[in-house]
Amino acid sequence: MHKSETATLIIDGQTYELPVLRGTEDEVALDVSNLRSQAGVITFDPGYANTGACYSAISFVDGEKGILRYRGYPIEQLAKFSSFVETAMLLVFGELPSREEREAFRTMLGDQALLHEDLMHHFEGFPPHGHPMAILSAVINSLGAYHPDLLQIETVEEFRQAVAKLMSKVRTIAAFSYRKSMGRPIIYPDPSRSYCENFLHMMFTVPYKEHVPSPEAQKALDLFLLVHADHEQNCSCSTVRMVGSSEANLFASVSAGICALWGRLHGGANSAVVHMLQHIREGDFTVKDCIEKVKKKEFRLMGFGHRVYKNFDPRAKVLKECATELLNSLRINDRLLDIAQELEEIALKDEFFLSRRLYPNVDFYSGLILRALNIPVNMFPVMFAMGRMPGWIAHWHEQHMEESTRIHRPRQVYVGPNIRDYVLMKDR
Image (cartoon, rainbow, N blue to C red; front, side):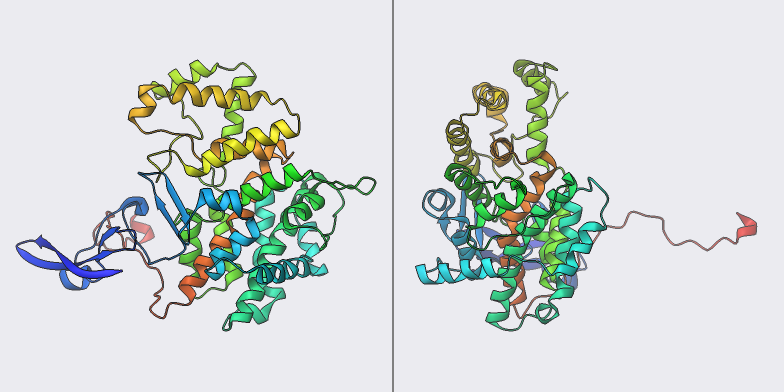
């Protein structure tokens, strides 16, 4: 990070010098951290779309060029050569692990998969068909009460233990929340199975029939989790950092991130894509009607466009190929995939979409993959949360290790009434 240049700001005839910061990818930022103390002025940026809140070395996004890298590694290479567990270790611990390190961590994940039996009462306390995201957030937060030794993480080993517990138990909690919502008996984790195989086992095994997922299904789920593992300072990541800035523990901070992810504009976007495709399949309107409605601003095309990407979302490219391969391997003839491909083909030839740089994003194909794996729509944001867990942990820890971290406290531009005197009840 370079900090040798300055920019000049003039307010009411007074000149102020603002340091210019440059990141390793040559991003440029103006340091306004002292502007209020020097000039009595704040910046105004609704939605924080143009505000850098931290330094981070975890992931990098270039929306103009369609680039996503984890710790410098392109998402395309990780999708082709790596796995979710290995990629999680890269994000959380900073480097790709050796074979021995990876196997040792996988053993830890297997060892930490079980929940304390008292936690089962939490599942019993939720109503039938309670949303799995509500259960996931609540139980993740409750983990802190069962691991008080990890509420104040001070050592490398404590952090490693906390990482293994969260990454392993989140899939157990996710699977249990699904079983609860379906009124089915709980299936306990099997430490002899791989990360994704174990999850699918807990989701779909029944007492009289063990579920054995195909290699293609395991690969597709692993890839889904990998491409969702981190994405810079998105809404849920920023929530984790903001909560963590108060020195809240890792469990509470991640639980807050889950709540942020629950929103339909964040973790719920892929389910919205599936609903849109279902409406087309059921004849509510055609693909061409959909395109025309979008042009007339009568309809929002879900799965297209992105707050950051003004080019093709690299994750969408990876998942499109994965969705096609998965459906072919399972011999599933899903009309929704045909509709999605038709919609994409028409949109990418239409000047309306091209001029506005509206390309398919990660949500456009991720829902089709989850659908092929028989994951119900209300579990879609839970799957997103499982994938994003290593990113949240990495950002919480990065901030936790910074000596200069301050509690987050955004400013505002007040537009309410000026001072006024209290009116007694008899005079109102």
